Length: 132
Image (cartoon, rainbow, N blue to C red; front, side, top):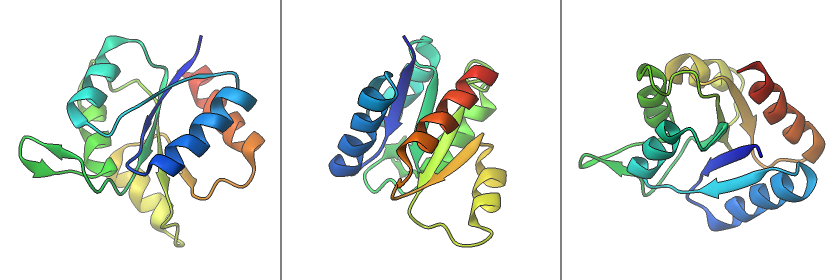
């Protein structure tokens, strides 16, 4: 079973993504905004891909506030988790943001909220899982 880890601080967004992925995509879903848990999941081999919200309001690591870009950098710089695909999710999709976020974070792809085309969303996730 393919499992997606959703790192998202908004419960409504989490529910929406979760529903699309499970109902339309037939995928398993786990969710957390706790940075230690994200790193544990990533190292556990239990998950196949991470959907990472860029602006995490409540996530703290080693006493510092961290956002999705920072967490993605941590995952991508660790040889144990660097191959795990990460898709950034953000509502702030200005021209040029996508490239900046991807370059800064090392993430594999980018999705902007709100997700309008559910099938495209699923296809984008499955395409990355199948590459890895």
